[in-house]
Length: 362
Image (cartoon, rainbow, N blue to C red; front, side, top):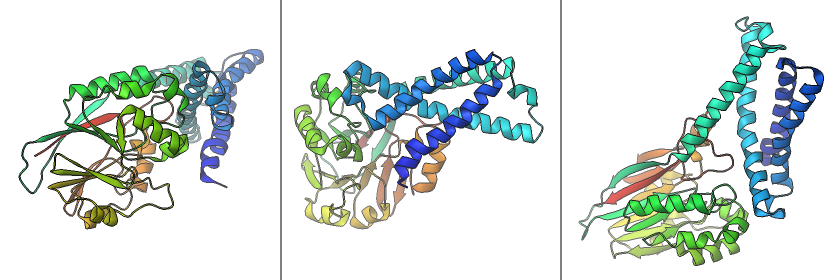
């Protein structure tokens, strides 16, 4: 069984069955109203499966956006409902939760409804509150002048992060007065259709600094040929196993995504790139950090993890990656793994935040 099938199909179905059984038990309503409640609960899950099996591109943009946002949001809501009911079941077995709270209970139903609504309203507000992280980078050799760099990853523009949202992000970037903007992959979420129909390339061109990016796995999901065309229209220089020198003093290397079977090693990329006073590597997925340290990279920017988006998935990310989020130093190399400016799926952040980095290279 492929992992993606287990994660996005089998697990949600099992979780949905578990939640529906509990909802049927806890609602203080006659059977007809319970059937109605279960039917309403099923609609977002149907949107989720429609999103993966049919795809929102088959629908008009507005309808595709509803299918995407409702469907993917239901995945996070389902996760928390499963956790709530597991906790209540354990409490009942330990005689900490009265049986009456889980059967035909006004208090139980109202309590869960209020808790979930408050939690996910907070989660959406928290997602929209973009955090600006500041950082100072030090070159071993003197620079002619400090360089102000805005760094970000995982914008995931598309059906949910639309042109209006992108405009807000561009204003934040411009307000930081960057000399250069670096993006560590997954600018595109998974479809080119909303980018074209909302002319998001024109929004990107409003960034008042050169923009360089490496590809992420979602650029390949969307179709790398269309992604490259979009980047050309948007004025974004895509560094795909290639490099560029900025101001004669900074080398920026963009590595192809790990999802590709054939890509250059970090050592080879460094060897083939011009030697300047400081080297930044853009590598979307933060694997094998020791190789970047051995290759002599000064700084690596990565993303991909989103730091799990919601708790407790960030704990899983911590177990999977050497550095799932934030700053780290290994040898003489500094690393930063961003939780992302945007997000995949439902616009919720619980225990994590959306961010961009403003760094000054001195």
